[in-house]
Length: 469
Image (cartoon, rainbow, N blue to C red; front, side, top):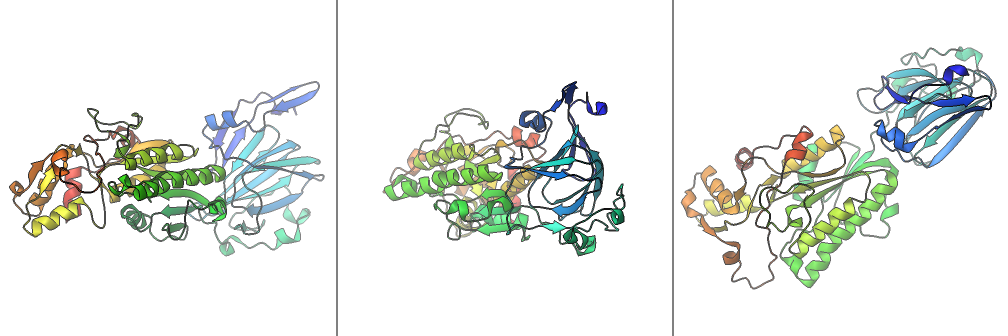
């Protein structure tokens, strides 16, 4: 046993993505030994995501050569031994390019291994009285999807220390399929809310119709319903993208609109955050420049203090605070969203075509956010596993007024830009007969943080030309 003492805590990457071997410090003396078998703070500091174990299982094996597996479950495992020693074999049974990749290692009390969801797990005991332990982050369910691989599969070609013909194997393990007959475990599902909206449509175009991506409208899933916690088998989901929102800025100033805005933009987000946090789901929530009052100079960074002016902005700020309660969250803050359907750019292009000369607000400054780019940024953050938090996402380039953008639309569509007249916000709404929400005059967002992750926002002028084309 002396060779297990004195190792520093370290992680060792393996040939299987996400399968990480750990060396564990073991401290011993004449009385025996002690180790921290799972220490959340230290493990996460090394880069292992806090996988949220909910159950600890122990399998005691009294004979050398006890052989079990190869089983892949839809949850993560932290595998170790309390006494004895095993030869472990892991085969990636997840859908993707690493399907079928194999890794083997011996595990004694000074080692542990993190086995991600969908990686087949198996072992053979090398010592009598081996206590094999594993933490898991979900409870067993007959409704879950499992995958099994035959221990003698020729493709995996595991070199078992003790020939399989000389060990005891369960009847079930003997009849598991070869690799060619295994149905890969699909990724955890992605749920897109607000699928019929501008951003929802852009996300569908970006993510496609893969089997693990689900698109729903509020009519199909009411996230404010008390049944939300049981509306899905949430452990099967890895990501929720909340592209749903109440965006009728002026109607939100009415009694009916106020309730609707708070319901969709705050209450619903709070419910989603609770579900996401309970089940280890990454919540992506879309924010707005309206959480600021627009009186600041320069560009608003992600950590600028909230100061919303109207009901819509207040409800969005509350939604941001709710989203932050989920441990795994991305808040994507945008401004002046342009996508498929009715929007400012389409309206200006229509006015130009019909020969109408508009008066357009010139004292509100910001950048357009094209839904195509917002969708791309969301996928980027998820793909590169960027640090959780808030990210501003708009077009790049110079900040412009609505009037400047209107003139650009007229120019691109070969119309006289002089036909667009400037007007102040106060003048534009001077004769309004229905409630009007106050607007931030400066909506320019700082893009340094999203750029630092490797995502380069498109130049706004170029994006506008492409959109109108």
